[in-house]
Length: 199
Image 1 (cartoon, one colour):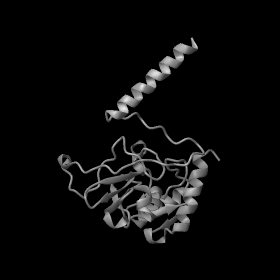
Image 2: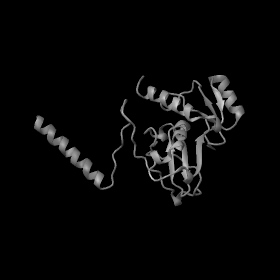
Image 3: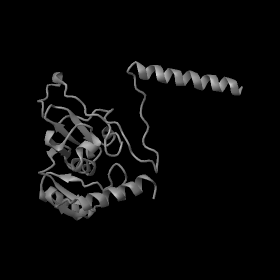
Image 4: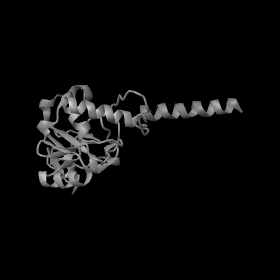
């Protein structure tokens, strides 16, 4: 019986390698708790048949992965964010927090790319769900609303009044993009990692 199991495992491994060499792709698992996140998440090329302008924000594909944390942004689309490069390629993120971490070091997460190639950065409006330019959004830090990693991830709002109404109900402080410091991002990312790893 053990020999049979070994033959089955070898057959499955061979099939996996064969599919990989033919361009097929098996679903990639979520990162294990405690593991360093190292994700190959190339940008999604612009589809000229989509009818969308080259630099417009677009819907998040189911297979897109966040290059910062490895999550699939389509699983929590109301938190998603994206950057559109000047050639129309798009990189998707699970949250505004991951987008802002990415913008600090684009080349680290997308090899061969740099921040100067980004034509637009977008976040989802927490209320209404439309795409907002990241620079124009009002963010709330420290609310009770939990993001896709069960931690606060800077929900974004179309204007100060919407953000104030939200903060009155769920707590938190209002911030513009210019008020979000690298130190705050590092603290929020560390908090998110604790939640991700079950701490």
